[in-house]
Image (cartoon, rainbow, N blue to C red):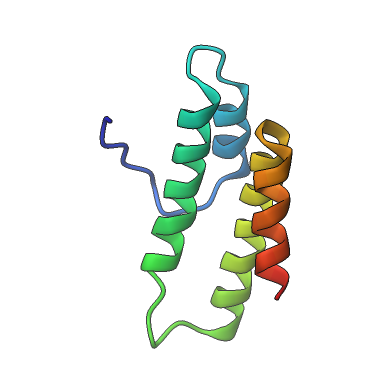
Length: 84
């Protein structure tokens, strides 16, 4: 699998663009979306503010909703577990 480097600024256009790709398989789309989500959480630190943490959680919800457009069950499971 190719290494994909994303800018850490969350951009909903990037997520929507990934969803709209016709040339890559759904599994690869989900992998790219989860990589973005992963990178967000990895860059949180002890010095992160509560608003930064809430913003990342909101971004994750957007990503999980995008995943549910590809694989409904998987996306809903992510959303369900985030709400716990």
